[in-house]
Each structure stands twice: as structure tokens, then as C-alpha cells.
Image (cartoon, rainbow, N blue to C red; front, side, top):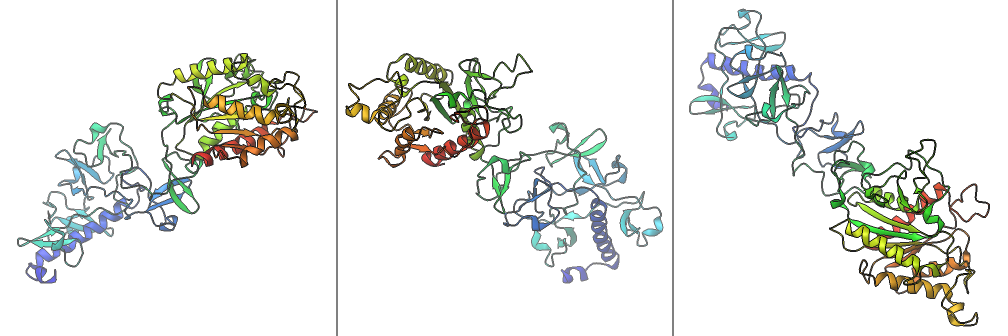
Length: 506
């Protein structure tokens, strides 16, 4: 580079020096503007925010991009405007020949340009002398022309500038363009209402934080598709907004049936803890809807409790809701939908094949699947029942069926036989499969039945299992202690969700 510059006249050398100063002045001018990457994410204030070195950091509860890393999409180089008058809004950017350009301020006095090259120096910054020609240097055809890396090269007997992404501060303000037509040249900058603006753009395929997948969508509080877990940036697999999620996005349909703990009657509601999740659907009295406890999807107006028509009433809680919400929270790629049909105060014989309730449940499942064209079968069957049967040997259910005497094997192993038949019958239905996962939960107090239920964890079928529940709190007003409280249902829902996700491999 030095050898090239030797051949330049003193005046040319002065011109190059002034241009270098001009670039410094531009950087100084733009340094006061807030900094945003071209993909609309803010630049990190400190590179220390990127602990895993993937170019993405976490500051102020938002994802940010470390300037100059691979995650930073290069911003197009802007040429200098030929006349300062083009900067009508004074933001340092103008519009010339249908393209954005950069503007230097006007010199207050021609004396600031002693060599008469059209560039001056005032207030420790470069400026343009009004009325004089100050066209920028040509662009180098090859970066190899700049041997010393100072941003200037020499080609065809002339000094030229090497194109490079501008510094972190060289972006026009923080105003986002409202219309894509404002950027006819596609350089990422537009011009609206007399002000330069930035064209918002989604992150490019290359600007993703590694291949780490977030374990929970809650890691992404700003909803930009990126989260932060275990000291590293991660990608949220499902980044659709609530307004764009539809039934077509449902990933699994889950049937939940059993006794009163499935119904959730008289349990408390917390508007924050029990808020709807945009990726959870329920089959309600009005068809598939985003699950909301104010709606009705089971008998006797459960769980809504007429709260939509009477604002003085509160909805009840619901086990199926808590299970599905936990699945969606734990796995951001999943959109669960559930079908609920409970029958309180009934023994397992109530679910005998072709019984009245069995037919009712069967019909509801078929109708729900017909309303979801892309799903022809359910993906899991969840069971919570046993209080009416209670015993390990025999049953306390007055409506028990299927045995000849209390001395028979059918009676002594009553619940185990009934449960095995139930699983086989469900899996034989057209809406299920021979390997449909079947998961149950312990009752709070029926220790005899609980032993039969928990035996599913040690049988030969890897797609059956049971979650513990005897440690969970009971509803405060339940003197018998058989019904879970709202807090108990939330925890129980998480346990069902964990077993389901483990069973299907996440």
C-alpha cells in the first residue's frame, strides 16, 4: 500500500488523509444512535453476554447479537451522498438515485479545507465544504487492493475504498419502516415521512444459535424464537404466535377419563396459574377451542361452572387441562389437544366394553377426531380412577361385574383383570392403536387399588405406566381427603406430562 501511495501527489495524499478523517467523522456521527442488527435484534452491549460463543447473547430479558460475529447479518455498505442537502431530517442519511446514502455535515467555513479537495475538518469531525465537489472515491474491485487493511486500496492508478460492513453505530436511527415499498433498492433502509428508517427482517437461516433446542418455551419471554437456558442460547422449536396457531398444528390428541378427580369439581381457580396456553386445545361443547377453564368440555358445565354467563362465579380446575398445559410448556414443539369424559362415583365396571358409558365415551372421541381431519387416532389414553373399587383383593364397588363368586380368581384379582381388559379394549378401537400409550395415576387414599395401578410400571408393556400421587394435597373442604386440591392437580398434571414425554421419547 505504501508503494502505491508514493506515486500519489501531495494533494492526493492529503485527499486520502481527509477521507480517512471523514470515515472517522461518520463513525463519530452515528455512534449516538441506538444499535440494531439487520435482522431487527439489538446488538449486545457487551460480548460477555454471549457465554457460549454462538454470536447470540442475553441482555435486558431479550436476545441480542454480538456485533461482528457469524450471527450478525452483514449490513449493506452505503455510499456517500454527493450533496449534504439530501439529508432533510438531519439523521446523517440521505436518498440519492433511488438508494440510501451517507451524508457528512456541512463545514461552517471554507478555511477548514486548506487543500481545496472539498473536505474539511471542524469540531474533530470531517465535513463537506458547501459548493465544492466532494464526490467519494471509487470502490475497489478486490479487497486484495488493501494490503495494509486500512480500508483504502489502489487500482488502475487510482486510490479506491474497500467495501466493508459499516461499524456497529452506522445504522439509521431506530425507526422501523412501515411499508416495504419504502426500500425500492432492497438495501435494508427506507425513507418515510421525511425520515430514514430500517426495514424489519426476520432472522436469516444462518443466524440461529447453534443447534440447541430449548427445553421450555418459557426460556423465550420476548417471543423472538430464541431462549436462554443453562448458560447457553437455544432455539424454541415452535415459534408461532397465538394468532397463527390452528387445529392443523395439533401434534397429539389425548383422551382423559376416570372418576371425579378428572372432573375437578369444587377445585380452586387462579387466573395467573391457570391461564390458557395458546398451544393447548380442548374438545368442548362447541367443538375444538383453545383450552380455557371458563369453557365447558365435560358434564354438569365442568370446568366452566357457568362463569362466562355469570361473572360472579369462578371456573373449576381440571386435570386434563393441567396435563396438556404441562406438555406444551415442557416441549415447545408440541401442540396437545385433549378429549375429556369423566364419570364421578363409578367403579371400573362402568367402563366395561359396550357399557352405556363406554359407548358415550366412544362416540365423543369419534366426533372429536372427525372435527380434526389430520388426526385419525388418539396418541395417548390417560386414566384416573379407583376410589370406588378401593381394594387390592376384590372390590368395594356395588356395581361390580365379571365374577361368579368372591372365591373366584376373577374376584381376587378383580381390578387387575378389569384394568387389563380396559387397556386391551381401548387399544382395539379404530381411534387407537395396539401400542397407544396408557398412563394412570394413583388415587389419594385407595392404597389397595394403587398397588394394582402402580404394577403397570413393572409389567412387560413399556407403553403403560402410572404416576405417584398419594403425597399430593387434598381439597381443603374434602373431609374424606379423596379429592386433590387445585395445587395437587397442577402437580399431578406435570407428573402425567413427564411420564408421557418420557414414554414417547420427548
